[in-house]
Image (tube, rainbow, N blue to C red; front, side, top):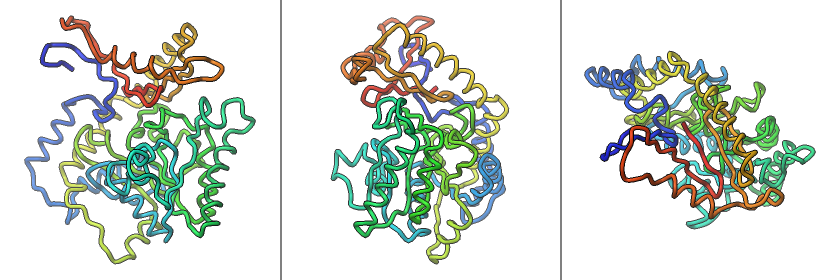
Length: 378
């Protein structure tokens, strides 16, 4: 990318332009569909059916019903509605520091936001982030998976004692705003068992982390193992490469319970022919250019370089990631793992500015930060 002064930028933060800015195949798909009849989403269009079928091939078979929307926030709001209608319960468990969107319902389940506003609602319960580096249960714990899952179990039991019932455990498959955390394998499965036993459902928010970014799998929840399948999956941001499109995938049982209300769900622009044409083109590019494999290859290379720096600089406490979802913790001391907040701020400020004179090789490698964890999206 280039700015008005001719500087070159290497974009390592945009988690929306999934296949690159202005990819010609995406631009072509949008332009061609824009010249054709727009049926509106009151009627079926081939693009809508084709896109749903293509998405279904990337997901476990039981996730076979798709709702199309215009943004990740809309998708997460609908997921919450689906969960509540299906379970007839109200309460939601979320992870600490989570962010799930900007609608009122989603701010209420986003500790990252609500702590600066009206605070935690009675129906919201916050579980610790399953962080084995700086979390409650670390890498030296004998069974951090069970310990973190039991935190969810304890929350459920406490809620029941207060006469409250859990509708959903709403969680990003890889907590991003919460610090680029890689939950230990098996955690989701054990936590989901507790949630299901309580009559709730598991919602995997894949809006920032899905669509092949993690390299090893198309969806980040698949890092937890083949035996784990969420009840609801939300997706947005990269699926339209910058065009506003989002989706909720769920089971037939949950969808039927939602439809049984008699209150029809309708979204004027969700699933319109242009959006679906773009969505199909994004999937085509990912497949044709083997971008999932590329994310794994480049991510492994970047992780290798970062880990080499870790051996040289004690300020780097942890390097973790999968594919092109990577986090780097900066600390003041190795023993206590105290956050190096000032140093992190300095690093961000330094790399957020360049010399006034552009050169042929000038690049900006921009890292955003939550506390002292750098987030890398490439």
